[in-house]
Amino acid sequence: MSRPAFSLPPWLAHALRAQRGPVPWSAVVRGGLAAGPLLLVAVVAGQASAGVVAAIAAMLAGINDRPGSRRAAVRRLGVPAVAGAAGMAVGTYAGEYVGAVGLTLVLTLVGLVAGSVSAVGPVASGAGTQLLVASAIGAGMPLPGTGWQRALAFVAGAGWLLALRLVLPTPGALAGDYRFDGERHAVAAVYDAVAALLDAAGTPDATARRVALTAALDHAQDALAGPRLRRYASSAAERRLHAQYAAALPLAEAATALAWTGEAESGRGAEGARRLAAAVRGNTHPGPLPAPVRTAPALRALDDALLQAAVAFDRAPGGDLHARRRSPGDLLRTALGAGGREYGLRVALCFGAAVALAQALHHAHWYWLPATAVFLVKPDLGPLVSRVLCRAAGTVLGALLFAGLAAVLPRPEGLIVLVAVSGALIPVATRHFAAQTAVVTVLVLALVMVGGEPQASVSRIGETLLACAIVLVVGHLPMPGQRGGGVRARLGAAEGAAHAYLAHVLRESGDRAARWALRREAYRALAEARSAISLAAAELPPLARHSEGAAEVAAVLERLVDTTTACAVHLDDTGRLTLRYADRLAALLEELAALRERSASGVPVPAARGS
Image 1: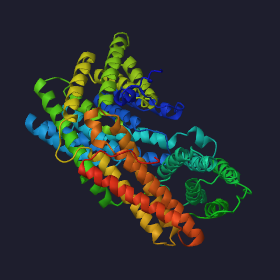
Image 2 (image 1 turned 90 degrees about the vertical axis):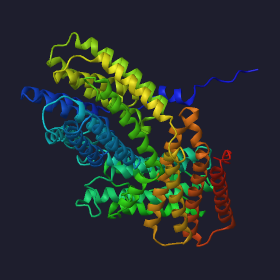
Image 3 (image 1 turned 120 degrees about the horizontal axis):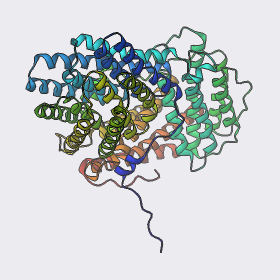
Image 4 (image 1 turned 60 degrees about the vertical axis):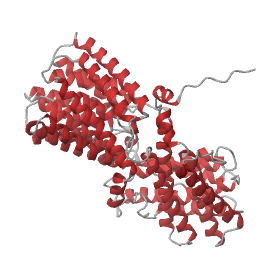
C-alpha cells in the first residue's frame, strides 16, 4: 500500500516559491545607475539629506521597474512617484504641525484612502504603497528641509529612474526600431500563443493554452497602453504595430472557438500565426500564409482572420482596441466597493496602529514600523503568513549582512557603493519577497548611515518583528460586512463583464470591434479574479475559508465566456445558433445561478463540473 505524497500547506508552499525567468539585465543596469549615483552627487554637493530622499524614491521606483514597454513604464513608475511625493509632503507637514495623536489620526486617514485606492489595480496599488511609505518617512525621518523640498527630491529620484527607463536602450530595442522595446515582443507573443492554442485544439491542453493566450493579450494590451500610442498615432510604425495587435483579436477569437468545439486544426493555421509572430519581431512582411481548410465555422473564421491579418500587416491603420476602457466612475466604484472598503479599513488599522505604537516607544527610527507594516498588509504581494515569514527572514538576513559590511566599509564611499549594488540587485530580488526584503534592508540601512545616523541593524530587526505581529493580529480581525471582499469584488467584476459580452453577442450586433473589446475585458477580469482567488486560497484556513467556492464560480464563468466566443463565431458564419450552443449557454447560466444561490445562503459550494 503506497503512502500519500506529502505536500506543504498552501501558505508555506507560497513562501518558498520564487518566480523564474531570465535575468533582466537592462533593469539591473538602471538600478545600479539610479540610487547610488544620485546619492553620490548629493553628498558631493553637500546635500546628503536630499540625496537620501531621492535614493529612497529611486529604490521604490526600482521595485516597480518590471519588464514591459517604455510607454507602459511611464504610468507604472510615474503615477506611484507622484503619489509618493504627495505622501512625503503630507507626512512632513503633519509631523511638524500636529502632535502625536493628531499625526496618528492623519496617517490613519491616509492609510484608509491609500488602501481603498489600492484595490483598483496594480498601478494604483503601487501608488498607495508609495503614498504610505513616503508619508511615514516624511513624518519621522530626521532630515532637514520643508515638505515641498522633500517632495521635489522624491520626484527627482523617481524621475531619474524613469528617465533611464525611457532613454537607455534595451536588447530588444537594439535589434530594431529604438522606440519599440517591449511592444513588438508583446504583440508577437500573442501570435505565438494563438499558434500554441491551435496546436492544442481537441486535446486536454487546450484550456491551459487558452489561459496562456489571455495572459499574452493582457501583457500586449498593457505594453501598448502608454501615452505615446494614441488613437491617431503619429508615425507609420506605430500605426502598423497597432494594426498588428488589432489583427490578433479575431485570430484569438477563432482559435478559442476551435478549442471549444474540440476540432483539431491541420497545422496550417498555427504555421500562419507563427509566421505573423516572426514578422512582428523582425518588422517585416509575413509573406504568403498557408490557408486552413474551411470545413467548419471556426475554421472558416480562422481562415478569414489570417487573411485579414495579412492585409493589416501591409497597410491597415488599426482601430483603438489597445486601451482598456474604464471610466473614472468605474475606478471610483471599485475603490468604494466591498473590496476597496475592506482593504482600506485593514490598511488604515495596521498603519495607524503601527504609527501610534512606534511613537509610544519613542524610538529614533519609529517611522520604520509603519513603513514595514505597509508592505506586510499588501495582499497583492502574497498571502498574509507568507508575507510575514518572508519579511522576517529577509530583514534578519539583510540586517546581519549589513552589520558585517558596515564594520569594514569606508564611509561614506563604501556605503554609497553598497547602495548602488543593492539598487542593481532589486530587479532580480523582486522574484521573491524575502530576497527583495533583504536587499531593501541593506539599502535602507546604508542610507540611514549616510544621512548621519548610527548603525541600526538590531533596531531594524526589532521593528520588523513588531510590524509582523501587528499585521498578523489585524489581518485576522473581523471587519464590518462579509469577509473576502477583494475576491468577491473581482469575481463580481468578472461576472458583470461576462454577462455584458454575452448580451452583446446574443443581440447579434455587427460591431465586431465592440465585441472584441468586451471579450478582452471579460477574459482580463477573469484572469484578475483567478489571481485574487489563488492568493486567498493560500491563506491560513481561518482566512482561506472566506473565499471557498470562488474558484468554482470562476471556472463556470470561464466556460461561459468560452462558449460565448464560440457562439459569436458560429453566428457570424450561419446567422443562427443550433441547439448545442443554446443548451450549453442555458446549462452554464443555470449552474452559475445555482452556485451564486448556494454561496449567498452559506451552503458549501461543490466543485464545478468540467473545470
